[in-house]
Image (cartoon, rainbow, N blue to C red):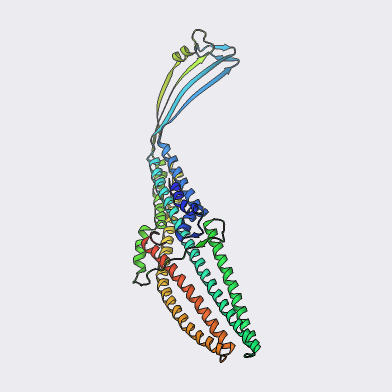
Length: 436
């Protein structure tokens, strides 16, 4: 059913052969194609199958058997119990069953353990998807940022080309020296090199994003810009966010459920030290060719018989076998507890870093925007002097390089802040609702 729902969600994506993908649509493609997430799906299905297998152990086993035998030589007649020396055949039919009555609650504890392991696998599946979604979101924002940087350098190239055209006309008119033209052409070459580098970074980021979604790269596909969020900063406490995240984040729940499962594993092992009671029975009939007086069905009717057995097994020295297994299970439980502690530590540190980075990136973006505003004004003055012939090429190149660097910083700061806003929102609410 979940696959059908996902398919219906994706139909609009493919049905209209769209050339633009949003972040939410990329996440849907990730859930459909990402092999790491698919591996976690298989692990969850395996845990479900293992649970069904464990539950089947409490059901009775019933079997129907048919045996056809040909006897040669000296044998005992099935009817007279006398020795005979001839070739004869016999056919037997039977139904047998057996079922456990009491096993020290071994299977019941195994079932409880299986339920916890299944729930742990389900939570881990969600945790894996969340982790892959975070990486996808980082890649998505990187595509937008590298594209903006490429467009910025393209504008720088256009600006330098305009300046070269103007100086070429002035050189032809004899109003400026050719050396100034060569210096501005050198600046144009630098801008084109930076433009090519930015284009390569953009293409690399796109390829990484397509690979994350495990789909074929398509140059015709564009990615939808992220809408800016409210830049109003409210004080957030990392400890409060972490305490809420402990209750809702699937990786914490998965590790906790996995740790709890070992308590039932210990109980199921200790159950081997208790007496066990089993019930079994059978019903059968026989046909033999040595009996010429009765036909097949009359012989079956005449030889029908049944039995019912109640078996009691009392272990005498079983603890020598179970004690090492119990010790191993307890060590594994402590390992699971350590895994849970590490998971909590990683989550807490990630939240602390996200809270710190959000304010730092907000300040960085504001500073970068102010820097761009100041350097834009400064470059406008230098460019006016350059056009008037009262500024040298060094002043022009330096002002242009400083402005380009500031614009690049502002673009990177903008997208880092957009990314950090969404990441912290995910940590605060524990799900992706409204994040995309």
